[in-house]
Image (cartoon, rainbow, N blue to C red; front, side):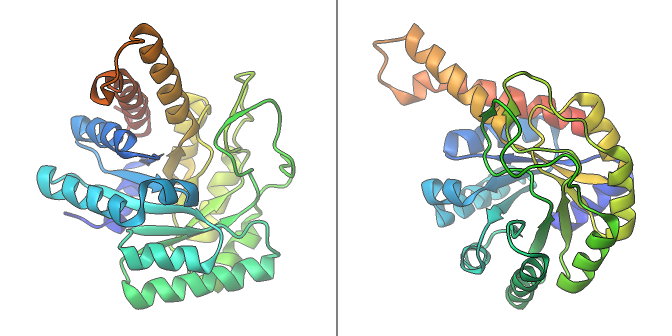
Length: 286
């Protein structure tokens, strides 16, 4: 099986993107993996700090190992949005394929220093572990929003020269910029438009693959244009959570006497699988 680095390189060459889906439990994991298997595509499972605490570090690694061994499935595990060196370290030590240090609330100098430390540690343990850095605040919560999150400004986007300096100083393998994207989904259904021209400039200036966070709710056209401009990985979380919750609520309402989880969870898993499959098809021009 190719490494995650090799799959990302291949995606860039083919002008497609790898889908990155956050999950909180084995049901979400199974739904995403099944969707990727059906389409014979690589996929990244993301776990935020809260999601890692809920599912378990070692448990998540074991799930990925089992999928690889049983199905020869190229599924990779990413420690999404880690806010300290210690949280990055524990994911590296547990055997994750990739880690993200999120230092956007720090000063630029502090962000660079902390990210560089994470890169150096990951390299010392396993050079194949990819480290992603972040530049530009886009909010922190994967939820339904009534308005722009506090602290997020559409005008405060990542600058190409800043991105170039950040990558050079830290040595990160990937960069997550602010290009008009926002974590979560707007209740109104109207998402901010992505700055496609900026994405193209950032990819050229940074010299490393770009990752689009806050993908849920983004228009199909923006996705296609962003991927063509230089986005290699797209994060989806809120869409999966919404599909999970709504389908579970409906399943319990329609079957009030059912107490077997493997029965009332069938529809939620099916709905999550459908979301993952539709996004994977879009990201891969299928």
